[in-house]
Image 1 (cartoon, rainbow, N blue to C red):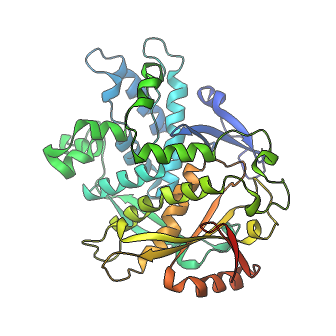
Image 2 (cartoon, rainbow, N blue to C red):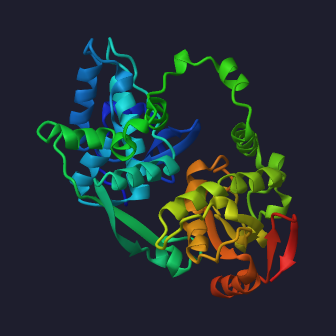
Image 3 (tube, one colour):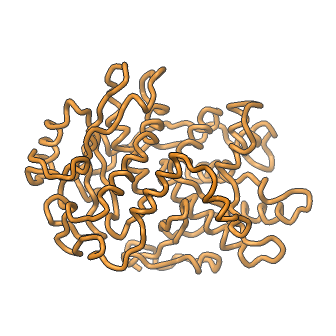
Length: 399
């Protein structure tokens, strides 16, 4: 355990099976959409223990099944009231911790079975908080610039921003009015009324029952573009025995030698529209009529160590600049590049299927017309070499 972690940290027995050591720090191993991630180990909050007690009690109630127990809204309310405020990515990480803790507590309790529930992706957490805001329960009330020292690579100041959320409608789930409690438990119904489909709610916050899933039936259904994207992501993260299988060396690695470049490109492209959709919803200016389809990726440029044969696989972040082409009949909206930088970077890091090679993605965005000048500015600011690797064209290009 590193000196930065509390040596007196209490590890509950329920979490012991999921605790691993990573970079000399203890972490909790979690599952996000079938992919392995780690979050910081911490001591459970008192409200989390009480919430789990309520869940167990409700699960043993013959009049109610576990699948109907609302968790996410309750936990977010209690977390924010306990912390006063928090930024979205940290809320999501701590929710992952809680879900794994819940699984550990219930795994050995007779009569109710292990309570497994997906924590969802960063994208789903972001959307849930937006829904809470639309329901009048929380607000994004301030932004904080993160010091450059906290990053391993150059990040322009306008992209080093955290958005903090706080509760504006407090709740006590034992004493508050049923109207307030219901809003926190099901913000969808408050926002959409009777039009909300019950299946849509379950898609966001539904327990996972692996033993009841027929994998063959799942694979035969819904062979649409979404499944195609997922297959490409799986290819990028396909198991390998050594870096040599990927065309890479552990030290002085170069991106051009990576033999899954097509899959890497598809991985980045597959989340581009999702990042734009989030940014448009959260835009600081009116965006009526603006759709993600109004923009597309023109070039994916990789710069820095991975383009200079100076990368250490599994250690060096992959630095990316996205050149954005405007294809819709709308004026250029200047928040779009910032959205790509902030949101797409977060999504790629959270969905990363090949962390053993690229431990982190640093994403910057710029409009196509500004791309050449922007690359010159990035190279000068970060003191990088005078060329980048064009992932789209699969070739090196001088800046």
